[in-house]
Length: 66
Image 1: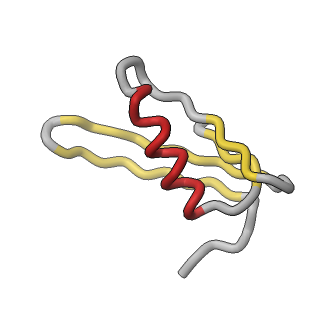
Image 2 (image 1 turned 30 degrees about the horizontal axis):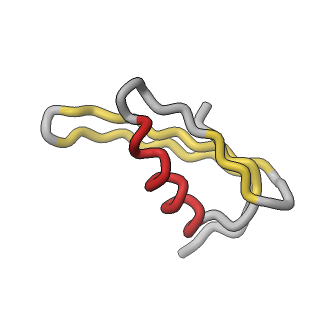
Image 3 (image 1 turned 135 degrees about the vertical axis):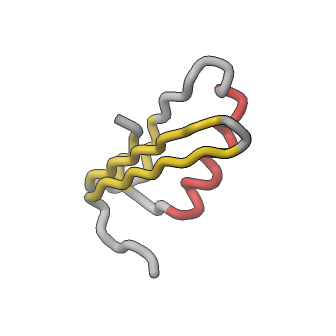
């Protein structure tokens, strides 16, 4: 089931192969899709793939990682 609201918050934690991670996303209403990502040093090459994946799931709004 998809989410239709443009205002929301999500948090997920996990661990795989000895690496732990936390994702937090916030979204507020907006006419276009604006993504703001903060990645740890060394993970910048993942940004295009993350933007593409988020763009397939979010159509509009301001989405950022707090």
